[in-house]
Amino acid sequence: MDGKRRITGDTVSYQTVSDNMLVCAVRDQVSCTVQGEAVILHLDDGVYYGLNPVGTFIWNRLKAPQRVGDLAAIVAAEFDVSLEQCAADIHDLLVDLLKNGLIEVVTEPTA
Image (cartoon, rainbow, N blue to C red; front, side, top):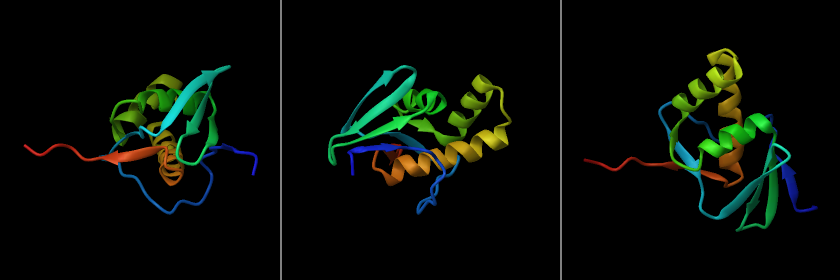
């Protein structure tokens, strides 16, 4: 392995996400944008990951906890796509990010 992986969103998932989940980037990573695409280094496994410009738009919002359904609405409005298609694509991407340990599900504090 060359230490670099491209997140495509088209792999078979082993986890699912729902619209009401809160997700955010894990702390054990560093990222930057190079030529409009996110480059993410997972500090635990030393593997680099890359995201296309739309994935980068999403990744930048995951620096703080985001509800999956809200994220889909923001992306759909920004890129002028249907909410249904956008939600499906975001779910696929988020499952890949979860599978690769780049994001985590956040629990809301109880009152």
